[in-house]
Image (cartoon, rainbow, N blue to C red; front, side, top):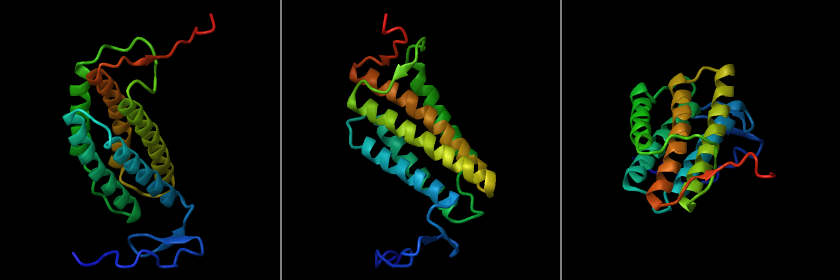
Length: 183
């Protein structure tokens, strides 16, 4: 691969537009760019999560997930492209089931927290939900790979369970919401 980014600034976006992977230019606040930005923010948030001491299973899974998120960003950047396939969703579901099998069933809502790593995982989950919403908004207006939306939906579920798993591994209890705390 040659020097793809030999010059970081181009000045072509100074007018409020940006180039897509197919060469077309769109406004920087378009639905497509909003979706790309949300997926990029999610990938960055997972990168921050990876800076924590995590169980090996979570560490390797999150690294693979970052690659898939980069693929989703590429799909969004190149209208009409599709890279994410159902087998990637299946992989998330298998990991989700595996991590959830060792957790106590929830009888209460939990608050984001516990260990710093679990709190970071909850933050990634919230950012994932935003990326899913932005991608869904784009899908209502333009054609995008529906499997990518499914992937983001399953990923947010996985991040929730992963946060609980991280707490359990760290010996930290989940933080339960107390709806009657004023009594």
